[in-house]
Image 1 (tube, one colour):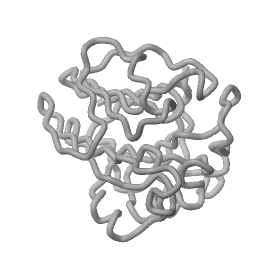
Image 2 (tube, one colour):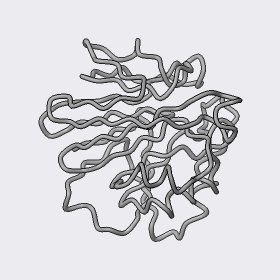
Image 3 (cartoon, one colour):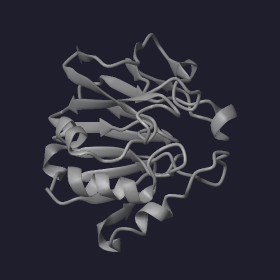
Image 4 (cartoon, helix red, strand yellow):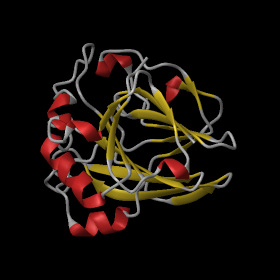
Length: 215
């Protein structure tokens, strides 16, 4: 499978069969930079804020999934889990939907705008996870230290940070370095590009942090 980072919390996931999913497309007006136009069979929306639900940027006739449900789309398993956008059980910012995908035998988890503290019940619901797409910027989501706790307890093979401040970003969130500084340098890989290709043989059982750069 291929994982392509489109910026902010948006990824395009492509199975070897060609089935594609775009997670949390965003508006330039809110984030501060333009999302590249993408084509997909499915769009998943973690919650309805314009930095996560700008479906107009995805061409084709995709199916949109924006609630807690389980589906099988052309052999890709899609499972969704209700969570909260804040640490007060949604009282400040509402609910958030976490999406899990099984593609080419790899379990990918997109945490959306997760804001709740790490709990044993949620961790148990999420497992197993091979690739974890996790917000790290704080303020509107979990911050770097809480993201590190999620990583330590989930123990995925690959962690890809998202929802962090970059040069053109207008949102009041932290840079990715706040998260990376919590890990030893030898487990961090900064990719010179926006995508990686993975197969089951790339999963070593040891956690690696992979930073993708939006093109």
